[in-house]
Image (cartoon, rainbow, N blue to C red; front, side):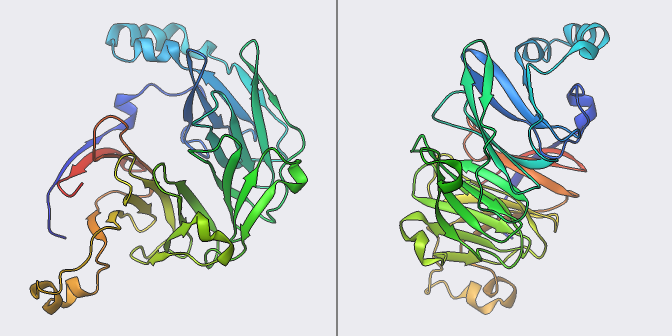
Amino acid sequence: MPGAVVTTTLSLPSLLPPFPFSFPPPRPPQVSWLGDEPVAAVWSEKGQVEVFALRRLLQVVHDPQALATFLRDEQARVKPIFAFAGHMGEGFALDWSPRVSGRLLTGDCQKNIHLWTPVDGGSWHVDQRPFMGHTRSVEDLQWSPTEDTVFASCSADASIRIWDIRAAPGKACMLTTATAHDGDVNVISWSRREPFLLSGGDDGALKIWDLRQFKSGSPVATFKQHVAPVTSVEWHPQDSGVFAASGADNQITQWDLAVERDPEAGDAETDPALADLPQQLLFVHQGETDLKELHWHPQCPGVLVSTALSGFTVFRTISV
């Protein structure tokens, strides 16, 4: 693909201290705030969800001497500030609410979703009544960026569901697309700027769903560039039409829905290699092994961060 990219690949073991849980966990930790305390939630190998306070870790990570002291004297004593063992087994899905501090959703491989509500004293009340609807493993969860009580879920049962927590858990599923992908739906991302939901599945497809037309059961766009299961998707935080995806084919792709092929350009149309590419495809990043997750940097526009078996990569293309 034409373009340029600046890439830095970092070795995880040399950059970060090991977390007080096995690495890699079933799902990377997700960070939020509980009052003025930064916290991270993680699915553990024990089949429970644990929450860790991060303030001390953040204090020492930039000071080599303090970090060495922490690793020697304190790390073994780090314990979660809260743990929930009410899931029936291990899981992958979790998401902090972007609108209600400390509110968390967790979903397991036994098709159950639980709601965590923060309570006084730095703890949580976890509703023991799971949200019911999926028939197989819950793969990903996404809170609405605009509504406090609405979230989306996707599952190995091939469906995507929209829920409202104001209803009883057994009746909270408001909308369903039963066959969103040909197989497992692995990941979803809810746009902060448009009523769009982005999904990626085992079929390698990327699909965009207009939530105003979700009842139709049809995506407004489908892209098939990846040739293996999609492992991560995320909308750009500022540019409403831009998103990125990673796949088990060891590719990261960047897309822009606003791009249309210029019929007067001519040259691209005569090149078979380019003519077969989706016109919205901006960039393909390769060279990593076993890609797992990617995120746009919240403060550096256009910068992508990805994790893989081969390392931790930070890059920015000239396209975004």
